[in-house]
Amino acid sequence: MKAIRNIICALSGFFILTVIIYWFNLDTKAVKLIEKPMMKHYDSMPRDNRL
Image (tube, rainbow, N blue to C red; front, side, top):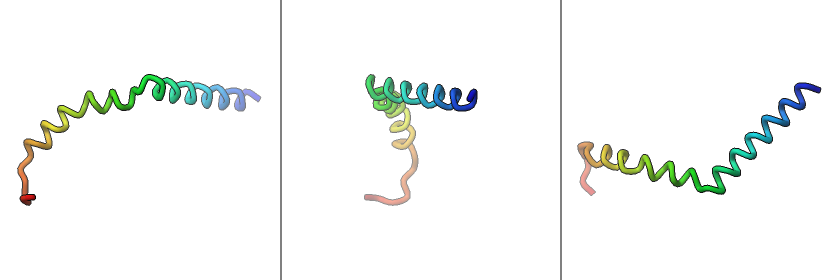
């Protein structure tokens, strides 16, 4: 019985966490934070092929 209660609590916590991420659009905000450093890194890399 304790194991089932723990599984239900874990799943409920995971569900609440995903709803909060969706509600506040946190995934897009996180991508925006790392986009500039990533673009700076990839723009500075030497190119082998010309487009």
